[in-house]
Amino acid sequence: MTRLPLISLIVLLGVTAPSRSAPDDFNDRFIRAAGSVKNSVVSISIFEKKEGSEKYVKVAYASGTIIDDGYIVTNYHVVMKGDHYQVILRDSLTLTLERFDDGSYYRADPKTDLALLKIKDDGRLPIRPVPFGDSNKLSEGEWVLAIGNPYGLRQTITGGIVSSKGRDNIGFADIEDFIQTDVSINPGNSGGPLVNLDGRLVGINTAIRSESGGSQGISFAIPSNLVKQVCRELIDHGRVRRGWIGFLVKEKRTGIGKEESFLTVISVIKNSPAESAGLKTGDIVREVDGEKVVTLGGLIKSVGNKPVGSRIDIAVSRDGRLKNVRLILRERTVYKKLRKEMNTLFMRYGIEIDENSETGDVVISYVSPNSVIYNLKKGDVIASINGKNVTSLDSFVRMFERQGHRIMQMMVNRDSRLIEIDFTE
Image (cartoon, rainbow, N blue to C red):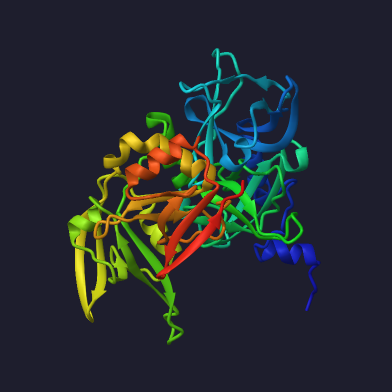
């Protein structure tokens, strides 16, 4: 039998030797995705005005992502530190920012840790908005890229995979629905884009989980669908209008079986959708819109981003029986006249207050993970501030305003105990 040369055998069998391209198709997708987005990413330097001086000092650096209508989205936790901002494009072109109607350089939604800056555009700037992708279509294991300004190193590209989706109870923001990745993220990446291999925005990088402060393979991004919703609200209304249920719940542990926790209603707010729907103190929340809910983070995620007017179906246990209630989320319009004071209270101390529908007590309805008052708890009943008794929501707001929006001391009732809490800023 005659032996054919190997190359002849390959031809006869119809087999072709693999060819290599440089770069190959897979690498080319990374290169195209990164190249298409780099002109949408800016570096942001944050400056603070020194007290008693006209000088500004640099206090932080971050990243920003250009979206439609000449806006830059970034993280609130970054811009809140400054009085002046320097924004630089890829080609070292410095962008001029336009102030909003209230004189501020940014509009923000502290609950999702997002902020908007507006570019003063004369039509000649080479700005390129990043196209939005659908973060709901992300898959675990999917490749993604991050572009940003880590440690001030502009236009740095890193890559990795989606590790998980829907992460909450992390403690970085008030409303959490994070994309977890293993993309290398460091200080300065905050506000930069997370993109898929089609070059579409799927998230805004916001935080890392690290003991050292540097990247350790666990990073978090705000999903693009949430970013789009929040930015649209900030552009159109100057704030994020959120649907409001109007009850306070407490997460309790059982330690029995697989269900390690459950949510019990501890207060129903006056004139709220919850009161109208007949929810009562002591009800145990089982499901929201057919989905089982057993943690505070799960409840906030399922409700916190639903728009005003959304219909919500809630299943609760009461006296051993399952009860279904339906309510319509609405904004807290009853408190519109108090919004300025409420916003100041939240921005300064990270707390929200409401009035109990059954007792009229003023209760702590929300405590931000970023609150400076770490020993306050949701459900605490406010007895006094700065030595003055609190008898109603109106009385609290009046005293808060007269005291120059400063709280030095607060007395609260918690589980039938009177507790004194000192406020330090």
